Length: 440
Image 1 (cartoon, rainbow, N blue to C red):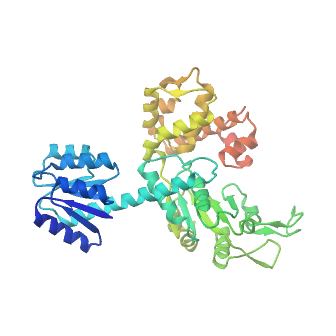
Image 2: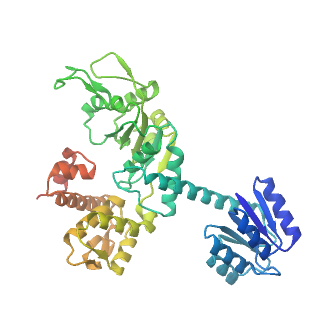
Image 3: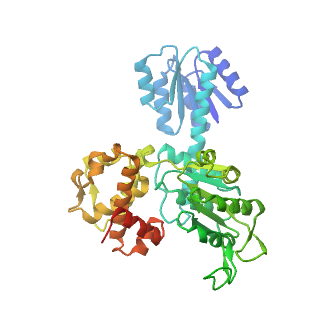
């Protein structure tokens, strides 16, 4: 990172320059505002450390002109005349921080490191956004908030590797999409992406599903079948809801990962497999390890790289953008949100995350009368924030029931299609419908 120090005191300039160069930064200096602007025009300066009061020009004016030429430039204002009003003014002009003389060098270094990290995140998320334009995904990556930029930056670094990665986050945050993106951004993008929902496969069929079986291996095995490990050869195997695996199957999965070999059920022959393994869970696997319900050795095998998908309530800045996207996707006519309705929507914490927002928009565009969605069109839980109280299980059950109904209505109560849209099996859908008392 190239840093420009602007100060009319030579001792201050030299002191800061010497310290920062010892930390490995490239540094330019200017004795006043006019000189600083000339340097700024010709050099790719990313960060400016600027004295607030100088003889030829105030730091306020210099920063304003720099920001006019390059809105991306970062700045820390340094002054011996610090007060609250000055700090507010320079922050409004776009300064990242404000410091008083004498400068605490270690505090300054910490601030610069944070800015440097932020610039790196922006560059990496920008690169992945450019790459996304050339990748076909089941849905778009929506969100420009800081948590999403940090996630995209992490994906950018994780994708080119061959190591296992564990994606964790709440239900409905988009963990499968993150896994697909890692696959499509990595060296195996031309290979298959094979998904296994560990929660939807009966325990007695899981081994066959994952490793395959030979003809006659068990009742109903009428022909040979390749397992998901074999099908993912040269590509990526994605194990969703891996926290649902019983301990017995965890041991078999660990062996396959360690030896990179599998045996089909009913066969003694070992088959070499070559697939990158990505996993996802909405559970705390470390807590499960301490409770004895998840193998510690398997946890460390899966958690070489870790990604956390933030819940929607931690990236509220993205709600408007997501809402506009879903309106464009599902509305058959020009429908928009009233100002008060959108404000209420942004305040709602969305325990079902992006999936809940998507189904909410689907329901609204289907049922709303007119071209504008108002507060009274929103479900009661959104209008009144009902989910802020009560047991978590009760709140989630209410959200799940509404999501199930919305999916069924969208697909004219065809259960196979509704189950596919929700990412669950038809068997699981029927179970949840019976449990929630949902009938056509």
